[in-house]
Length: 254
Image (cartoon, rainbow, N blue to C red; front, side):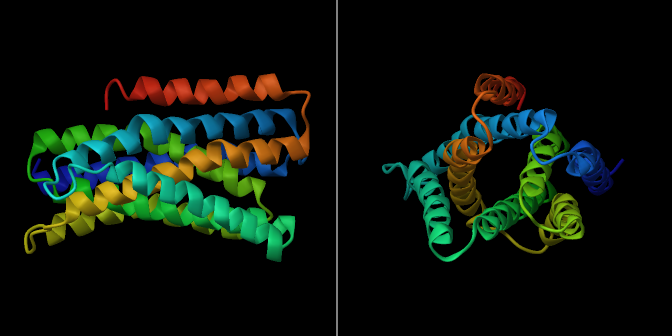
């Protein structure tokens, strides 16, 4: 098997993992609005986002910035993380000012979908441009280890919004395709171009995305669930912790 065919196979496997992970959240959209399993699933998804930010994206960004000569003396990863967190907080406050609660949830759902779509394209490109079997395999394991979790969590967040089901499915399909497209694009372009600032851009985006994930899994999660009910808070907290533990455990191998 050539390196190119291996990368294409990896892209297909990542796509299938992403699609399989969204089946339950999409089917659960037909359940009552405040169905207990759906609320616990939502809390579990928040734990996944929190773990993804703390155990994967932010540490990767810190490590990449540390080897960038011009950025090694300043906590750039933490800066971009704070910017991402504050941006979503600002958007939520702004949406409360100018929009209804329905539009507010829709706006944040769109924002999160866009961030994950771009992130998926970037990680696919990183796999596509990699020049060796060994490192390409490590990157593939790292991607597929959290891809299903991210896809599941995104579907849950989109279900929380008031977006039409057809639009939710379109966004998830686009998200599912981004990593394979990144793999193909990276594999093709790497033969012709040298990406001088790839690591710097990836580190900046990972740190920014970590900030947005921190917001969605903390302040936004708390605000949303306080509006729904409060008696099941401990159960939802437990579901969140389970999601966090799973992502923390995955970090041992990725």
